[in-house]
Length: 411
Image (cartoon, rainbow, N blue to C red; front, side, top):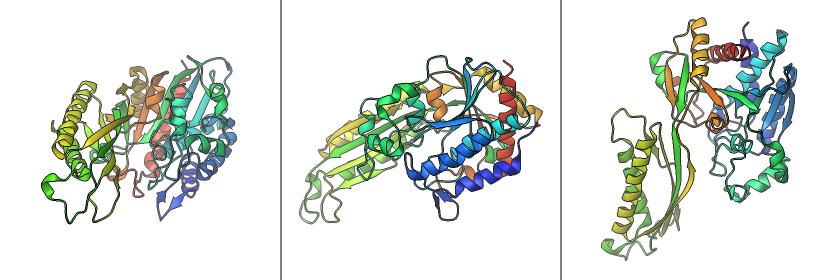
């Protein structure tokens, strides 16, 4: 039993037209009309596979194939259809479309599972619009944080308003939450978003776990002044402090050669943003990740100490807002063994590797066992219109997922 690779390719190509930018790029923001168009298309394919579909109150698209025993915990698969503002065609999409293809293949072969299967496109995995990701996957587990609905995007639209405009009822979140024990396990196929598989010339990888992300928003406050008249030694230049912090993030993250630690300052805002005014206020983000929690905690302390030193040096004040702080989460050994076995049956030598990026599987790991399959992406490029995975590799990944699902359904 194999998936239909030509149909899978057609689905990718059709989805890529929704929110298309340039020749190969995608911008499909969460909780928008573009995402809803993507949901409508994906839902039509889910329905062809025998699934009943709906959009819950968190903005998740859910397709459910009932099992012979609908009271059993479901086997859940999925990822997300929202994209980065300057993203590619495969990030998240691969996990949704390959999962749909797996269920379609089971349905075409007349296989009625004992337990229900659910395929989900989770709402706002990316997190860029409201600066907080994994919204839908955390939502179904009752893990949203205080103030999340009041977060606003660059157009001052709050998450609450965006959800209402999307057709969700925020007063009925509880109705969309999953009861403890209702999910048997979670599987997510994803492009690697890194260069390991490409450099090793391996199309498929087995994920061992997900690094724990630490996200901050840092604000430095100094004193504005005329750039032509305030002497350099007495300036309180917030941008100078930010610049030194950016360097510090890189220095701290690269202390141990070869370690999987990564650190990035991805956004920065300067006020008042005039060429002849000393910057008074700077707001920037910090993203620090590591699979080793002890090391990440040590580096976090080092960075806090450096920020304290830098602000004292430049006469600044500062605040740190902690947007996300997650522990590293490891895949279930029994699921990894099944994925490895399915790779071997397809004559695939699939290495085991960590995931630096976080995924919806990170949220689901707190509710059930999970496993992940990585598909090679060219040059490791992602979050970029140049992001590319071949349809041959994606079909291989979908067949590994199909075999994994088939074996798990026997349990």
